[in-house]
Each structure stands twice: as C-alpha cells, then as structure tokens.
Amino acid sequence: MFRPHPFHWVPAEGKRHASTDPKPFKGYPTGFVVATLCGHQLAADNSEPAWFWEMCAACDVKARDLAKTPTPPVGGA
Image (cartoon, rainbow, N blue to C red; front, side, top):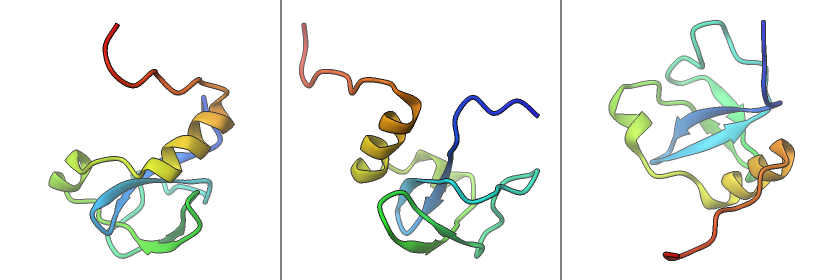
C-alpha cells in the first residue's frame, strides 16, 4: 500500500492529532489508544464530526517536519 508520509491523522480528545502507530485498514477505531506526535497516548474518536475538529498545532509542526513540508505563512499576502 502507498504511504506518502510516515504518519496518519487521528481525531482524539477534541483535536486531530498525528501518529506514527500502525493504522488498521479502516482507520483507528474509536477507543483505540495511539501515541501522538505531540507526545500523548490518546483514545481515537473515529466519528464523522471528529474529523472536523481543529488540528493539534504541535502535531502539525512535527508532521510537517516528517513530511518535509514548510509551515504556511500566517496572515494574508
């Protein structure tokens, strides 16, 4: 299976976090505990509304570093 990045996004505790834990084929099931890039062990929430939560800023920074993607500038042009 193609994996463009060594991490996956997972909603947990009110934010979308990133994790490098192996991901089941259909995603992390609700209640599955994952280690996040921000350093926590959190229970996944695989409900549809959870995917609309804001992104964990610390996970975003670490995920961008792993993906070698720059952080977009703050503000407008």
